[in-house]
Amino acid sequence: MGKLVPKFFTILKSYTRQQFIKDITAGIIVAIIALPLSIALALASGVSPEQGLYTAIAAGFVISFLGGSLVQIAGPTAAFATIVAGIVARNGMSGLIIATIMAGIILIVMGLLRLGSLIKFIPYTITTGFTAGIALTIVVGQLKDFFGLTIVTEEPLIETTEKLSAVVKNFSTINMQAVIVGVVCLAVLIIFPMLPGVLKKIPGSLAAVVVGIIMVKGFHMNVNTIGDLYEISSSLPSIQLPGISLSTIGALLPDAFTIAILAAIESLLSCVVADSMVNDRHNSNMELVAQGAGNIASALFGGIPATGAIARTAANVKNGGRTPVSGMIHSVTLLLILVLLMPYAALIPMPAIAAILFIVAYNMCEWRKFVYLVRTSPKSDIIVLVVTFILTVLFDLVVAIEFGMLLAVVLFMKRMSEETEVSGWKYVDDADHDPDSITLRTVPKGVLVYEISGPLFFGVTDKIMDITLRMHDKCLVLRMRSVNSIDATAIHALEELYKECKQKKIHMVLSHVNEQPMKSMEKAGFVDSLGAENFQPHIDEALKRAEELVSKRA
Image (tube, rainbow, N blue to C red):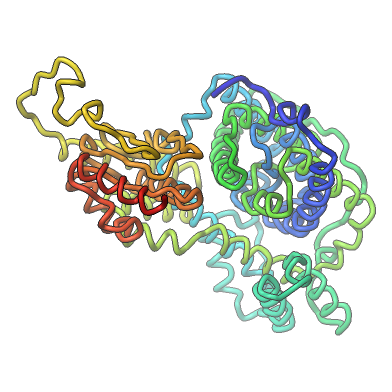
């Protein structure tokens, strides 16, 4: 996808002083949002609080500097929490450093080999399934701190089922003071975004941390704080490189691939979301190289795996960030906070951290989308979604993605075999001899026509996103006479295209939608969203409908 040139270097010639001021403002605001999140995600990952900041500082700066997105903000994310905790429990911090460096190398190689486009072959149902599964594992992992339970085990608890079993067995040790702090902090997190005026701009996570500290210290409550369980350091990170052997590399290679694949998926998904916010197109291969370099930098400076963070990226855009400079400012701001304010992190109550992670898990799980897919998708997509979710919770992400992909491919082949027909060939010398050819028709001014041929499934939905909407277009006609099958990933891509059309005030009309795609679109509610009148049986009726819509706007 184009040359491997970081976005930072593409904006230098046109960079202005006004944009620099906006980037500084956005970077500082995002840093304030990232501060409590980085600490919370580090603790959820089984490492010390400052290591979350090391990650946001080192990886965040490198990924912004080298990245293929204008506004991507990188750092520790919830998706890695359970994976990192498992690696640390099994192999210690040295094992995590080696695995993360290896993952970084894998990501760089993927980018250099132009493999960024391969991410499209992971179905939407799989990403939704494992994201919801990870969210549930985070919630289960935080129940202990939220309820103030006393759980003592000989070996660290790694599996989600083990953690849940320990919570149930030891629930009698509940600390009501911890519950009160957790509930109040949770209420602050929920209520703060709803407040009017200036208060709404204060990050809810920061407000929850402050309220939690005031409660515990002001009322002398018997609640564990970060300082009670961890040693806090405000010193700058130094380069760490543990001993590496062939046996160590072999043992950690599966973990490295897990980190690399998840980092690629999460970062490129975040890039796609960011593109729609700033009307830009990211360079996926450059982004993979940047993610690789960022993860290597994070590991060398004692951090944990990093990837693009959708929520922080959205906050960056919302506050005026439009170039990679805002991401670099965010990292520099966190560096200053680490040096000057990190000792105060010892005062943060553990129930407050648990409450923050509950909200993070809630936001990432997208349960409404999960339920929507279960209600509206074809049975094969529902099976892939649910199986991926269950395997993520019961086993791990590697098993979930591997089995989910295998299942998706098998079910796709089954669906294609059911849709395939054999009929006599209609001989046509060229398009002009086809009575239905678009070349035999007059396309009204302001109408853009695309024809989609072949089944629409998770491996080809990027073709939909490649449709370019021009400024003077007033109506988009999609001709689908050759589309015999469609899956949930493709419907999601059509919904995203429709959203873009609405934003640009462009009407959308579909022509000759076959039986299976129509049933799937009706079940998904897409027909109701677009309007049944915008589904026409033939290209002639579709062009006539488009002309009517264009004339109404004139």
